[in-house]
Image 1 (cartoon, helix red, strand yellow):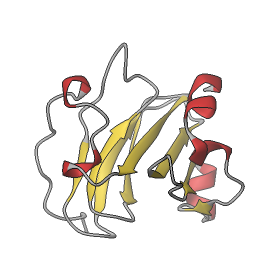
Image 2 (tube, rainbow, N blue to C red; image 1 turned 180 degrees about the horizontal axis):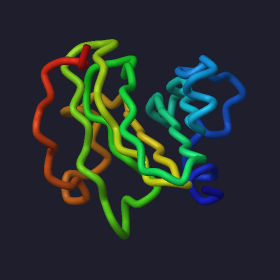
Image 3 (cartoon, rainbow, N blue to C red; image 1 turned 180 degrees about the vertical axis):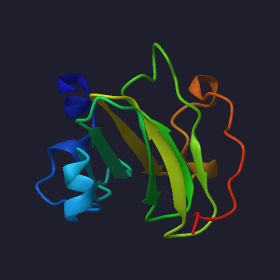
Length: 135
């Protein structure tokens, strides 16, 4: 995580937004929040969603992704890349699996290029689309 924090300005930012601030999620050991870093003259804006699972069970959690585009998991990007999450509309809910006692850090770069990809060669295959949030 230290390397990710040095690499991404959004993880060093002081502002954050809790996605799960209800007692049921906290009782189940789930914490999700968002960090943002605005664009500068030399760097693209960054949006990150951080998911933490403090339970002993792998969990699927539904997250409202704030902006449309492709979100790429960063923790295991080099060793065990996860499929990117494709979000069609701002605020769309998508499922994310979080291993037990682990987490996920999803990044969306706001670049002028297609989908904000950092480099096309490093992207895993897309996950199958999920049309809506369950009941």
